Image (cartoon, rainbow, N blue to C red; front, side, top):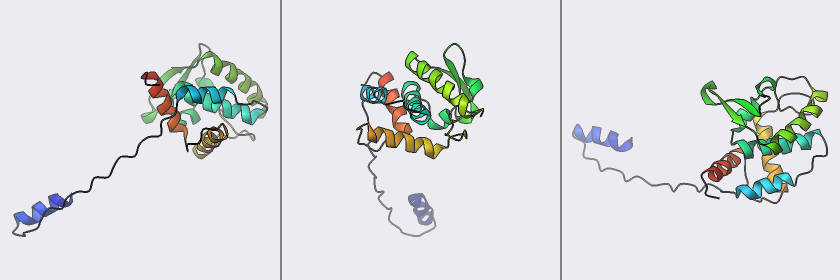
Length: 171
């Protein structure tokens, strides 16, 4: 933009030198081994409603590759009996994702406990029955992965990248 402005000024008689642009190196994405993540998630305890929900959140993100915002927007009526879940993505576009047996089993156990806590439309709720927020999901993912020995500072989007890398066959 600056060089374009300099060209404009030079066209009107100014004699200015172009500025060399500085290249900023791209940050490297922290890649995590998909198998390691799943192994650590499966080792988690499920002592109560909260720990069961947190394990389900991590497993959901790791197994489906959906965004954290898409996870938060899953409603109870989006869950289908055939193992599919309707996801509303960017631009309110709908798509169907499939969940695997381990996620289905955990989801069924979670739903039994969840029904005792709330009748909220949204799938993921806190212990008071209110819908979870985006920062809560981020904190859950980050804290649990760190507590499981994965020392890199990771958020939900890293799980999405790990899933995509796994699908591409690079891990």
